[in-house]
Image (cartoon, rainbow, N blue to C red; front, side):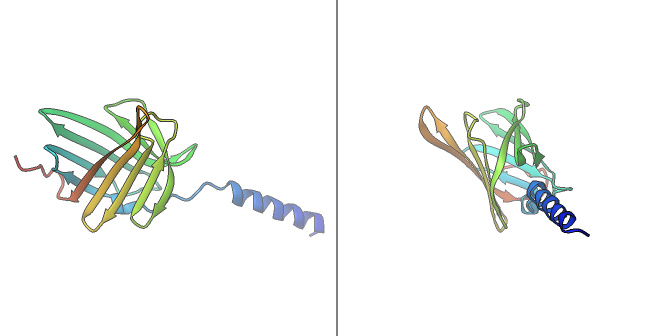
Length: 157
């Protein structure tokens, strides 16, 4: 190998390392069926275990005699690993992974009206979901404190 060939090979290798897609974080800690019976509502989230970097979720909330839903997934997008939400069947809104750890993931989309951040944290059999942002220039947030329960468990009536 000539010195020029070695240099070219090194430069190509460096370019590939810099452009390689980021590995998906291990979000297996989110998998399961989660229920929050607080505040007069019944909120459930179900998350699949990650398969090739893709986790699929859905949420159902029953409050005041009405039900609402959200379909979501976490996986690779052109912007990177993202939480992609579709509340009530709306068009997809991506929130790009901004931070992750062994039991915490923070997703961000500064361009979205509300929320601009989606946060998941797990402690034991508890999963906390929080959305944050601003409404009319004021900081706002909503939080759900889920407990791991068997599939399709309902809140006591």
